Length: 88
Image (tube, rainbow, N blue to C red; front, top):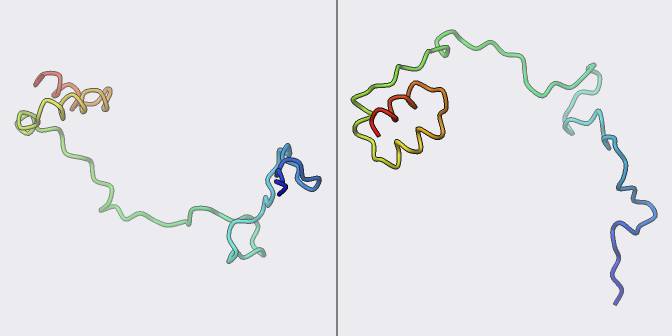
C-alpha cells in the first residue's frame, strides 16, 4: 500500500500567496455588482443606542471574591475594575 503526500503532487502549489477565488463571496452572489459586501447597509434605530448604566456599588458587594477577581483582571481601565478593587 502506497501513501500519497499532498505536498508531493505536481499539480499542487502550496506556496502561492494569492487568494484562490478573489471575487467569490457566496454561490448566491450577484456578479453584476461591482464588489460584494460582507455587511449589508442598514440603519440602526436610535432606540438601540443606549448608554450602559453606571456600575452599582451595592451590587458589587454581593459578588463572590472569584467574580471580583475576574472582573478586576478582565476589565482594565473600567469603572467596575475600581469598584472590584475597593470591594476586595
